[in-house]
Image 1 (cartoon, helix red, strand yellow):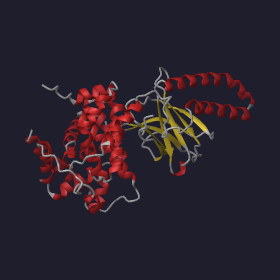
Image 2: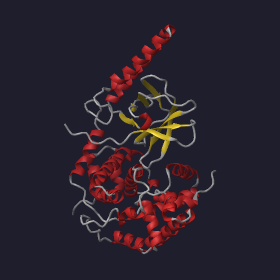
Image 3: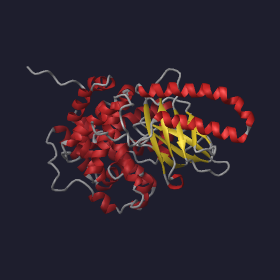
Image 4: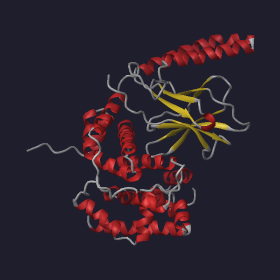
Length: 183
Length: 249
């Protein structure tokens, strides 16, 4: 019987002990997802690869100070990818704020994209997001993937800041309920 | 305690606050269990959003880039050339150049300053220890100046030796307006900014600034031009990046 794969927490402990094979295992587990997220945000393969490299190097360096309350290792790693990618996006001040349509069409439907994984977790999240009313979904996607602040979204969408906050709140609440039902 | 930040937690979880607001919310969360609990719950939901992304395959070379970067990062510093840090300058030359420039300026300005030479000698010896500890595995981050600070830069040295605090060696800092200060910041992987030192340029080509905190848990640094030594940061004039990989020899 093959050895079970080490848990993420175990991999992070090994990372803190400077075990390169643990980093390789973590990359094999999450490298593709990390790259897909960075690409979704940046729309450029080279920039996305730089972000992924930076994120894994951060994990390598920061594993010793990782605390569980920051989220599980997967969420922690992906949050680093997200922060880095959005940082880069926001520094491109020459084109921001981008027209809404450009930000919305940036990523996901190109021919080179692989089909989304068909496992239950991925499908559930996609369905939870797609089930939201368009305004809520668009607000959440533009904030998370488009790197827009809620103030920028208020201006871009031409709605009061309170409306943007409300769409985020209700949208995430609905997603939470759907995800809880499936667990 | 600050006011609760419940109506900003969704934007915080989505990364949709500007830096100043995100820092304010983070500071509140550190003190408020109720908001922290809600923030953790929201973060869990937001943490699923990457699963909605169509998967793409990175180039196979990315895996080796990641591993090469880590391999270099864990290696003693001395044999490694780091184009992102000091180019071809050797660390000890830069440190000693800083001390030498201090001696020259002191000598030109005031003969009485020679009395300080003995303390400078002790300081030089101290820096020698830092150089040695850097050789044994300390870290170096280079910050590049931009806009009005283009052409300047700063190297953060983390000696990782007992009793040796990190410090930044700046070069070619331009003068700043009266009443303004420069602040050195440490940035964590989740983009939390922590103040590490406040100073004003002393007009020398090279200036060393001691930091009042360690760098553990941080992976970038930056310098901002501020109106005061407290509060939110102003314009970022210099910042580092994560080290790119160095080709394996």
